[in-house]
Image (cartoon, rainbow, N blue to C red; front, side, top):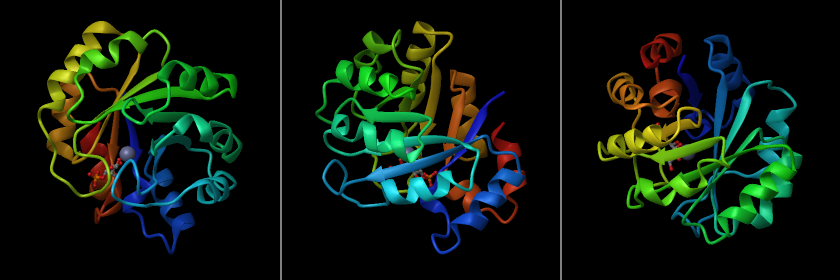
Length: 209
Ligand code: DX5
Ligand code: ZN
């Protein structure tokens, strides 16, 4: 079954504990945590202390999406904070091979992400080594943007190359775009505004499966 990873970026930051309770109660398996440094993307979100605090109150799978320059330098800090999956961008300046090895050495699962302008072929050499590929369906940096259908061919190409890797899609996911991604081969759907902004989050999550 498709795993749903609600993106914390769209939550009410005054009430993170309640927000986590809410999505846990309606059956989300993962929590997507967007870390932005104002350099790799033109926005700043939250970082290590927030993840560390939430780890104490949640058993959800922490799916950390690093939108930062030089992610290799921060692998240990995110391991200590309690990340389960640590995903970095292929475009972010650290050597991908070394970064994957550092993530595994700390007992986390490794993810590699590509922006809309990066072709699927760029991640294919890393498929045997990573547990997850995160295909961006918007330019990274902000929630609430419109889904780019060009991600669907990339999902198909990655799925054709691996039956087992988790393929996650991030940006503009709702009931309709989520179905397109599932048909293309995605196994994880990241959804921010669609889940946290929903009147009925249970219904939103059900419509994504
Ligand atoms: C964007 C982030 C996304 C974002 C998705 O850079 O990586 O995870 O929170 O938000 P929605 O689902 O609202 O497009
Ligand atoms: Zn994200």
